[in-house]
Amino acid sequence: MKFIKESFKYPMKKIHLIAAARPNFMKIAPLYHELVQRKGIDPVIVHTGQHYDLNMSDVFFKDFDLPEPHIHLNVGSGTHAEQTGHVMMAYEKVLMEEKPDLVVVVGDVNSTIAATLAAVKLGIKTAHLEAGLRSFDRTMPEEINRIVTDSIADFLWTPSVDGDENLIKAGIAKEKVTCVGNIMIDSLEMLRSKIENLNISGSFGLSRGSYGLVTLHRPSNVDTPEILEKLCTALSAISLKIPLIFPVHPRTLAQLKETGLESILQMANDIHLTDPLGYKDFMNLVMGSRLLITDSGGVQEETTYLGIPCLTLRSNTERPITITQGTNLLCSHENISRRVDHVLEGTFSKGRKPALWDGHTASRVADCIQRVLSRESG
Ligand code: UD1
Ligand code: UDP
Image (tube, rainbow, N blue to C red; front, side, top):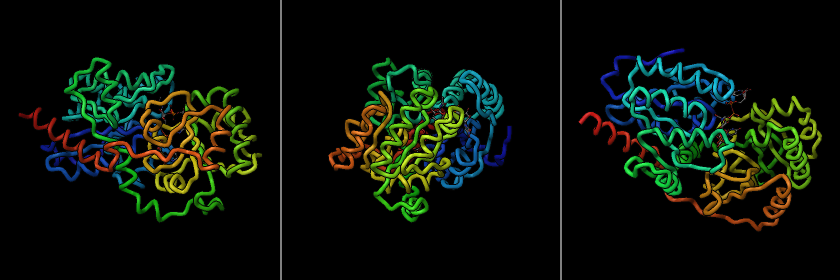
């Protein structure tokens, strides 16, 4: 465990921002930068170490101009219970020593639930940013993390009103819930000009608008060889219609190698396999792509905001607003090729931007934090 925060600042109110895995870093970045501007607030980045590869963690600190994590728990990978337990044990020690004024957790990963459990049990006020999302599919590990985190956290900050509705229906007190908007849009707007200056598709020999971009990492898609094989075969068929760029998540790479299914993708007509990409490089590819094929939560939101067709290889989504208002469509390995045809024929809904997906969520969250702190000290 590593602590690197100067203690001279410490009459300030200490806010722990919990960052653990790839989708967390871009959620805490705009908030960190907003909070350092606010008087009397000392944001402390706590990295649990759930993701640790350079391209799954460090690259995001660089892209978003974040300082090195002030506290690093170094928990690494493990089973669900191992990972959750290790974060709880390590973070509890930190909490007892540091006594933060507020803990902010984001998203729905194992570290989100673990940090929340550790903090709430010590009576430390805890807020969940991206609260209220529900897939209503309890086979998803993230759904369990969302339900438990939302039921015990003190403050619930939602990205869209469907989140508020889910929480109220679950019996959560209205006073705990605030719709703050989608912090992922702040991340994108923060780096938009730098992203637009890149030409990452060029390094694959592809021009803007001429390719599809693929990401896959959900256990329901990649952990069962029979399902993974069907998906690889579908992607191979799609690559006859449009070139595909596929930055491969480490979970997926391990499965592709273990099953030998990597060869289907390697032998396909036009699939460019690559390592996971940094945020700026990835978003440059997103912005230039004709369509996305994904099972990522964040990508469903980014494509809705940008008006790019998103074919989501899942039977449900915790982000239904990306379907009702945005450009998202749920697909299976059986119908995805036809859905790609629809996009290429130009018969795909353009969608619109959901309310409060406006790049000002970090500011609204910082206002909430200041209200919480003044209430606690008053
Ligand atoms: C986790 C989150 C998931 C999120 C995803 C984002 C949970 C339950 N899952 O899934 O919600 O959508 O992150 O990417 O919290 N690995 C590496 N290097 C790394 C990290 C992981 O090689 O830096 C490999 C390890 O073999 C590890 C496996 O990937 O066992 C899975 O990592 P883990 O964090 O447990 O789950 P993800 O599938 O990444
Ligand atoms: N992302 C990235 N590089 C990649 C793939 C994804 O920077 O190679 C970004 C992208 O902005 C996406 C975010 O990481 O929205 C979330 O990642 P992921 O899909 O791993 O997690 P999820 O949102 O499904 O939990």
